Image (cartoon, rainbow, N blue to C red; front, side, top):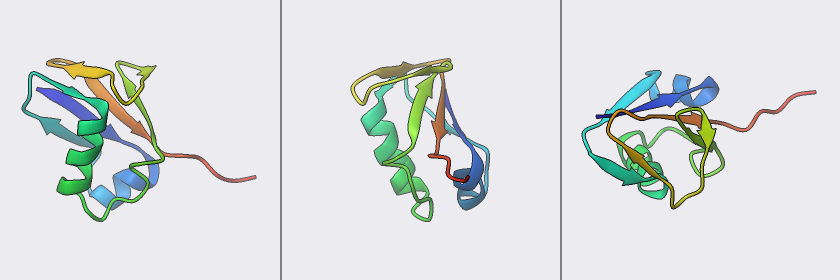
Length: 78
């Protein structure tokens, strides 16, 4: 299992703070696609930074069983 965490507006839009993927490994780009499919009302998945185990990733990085993936949406304000 791979745990996916949502923060800020993404959490509100998804209606949950976390989501579980029942896969042994998956690329970050594929995780984005699965989140878009599972939570079509969540905006910003393409712009959000993604971290695996608290380290920012690239689209071709891979999450594995036991990893925690976090979607961190862009922050605005001033």
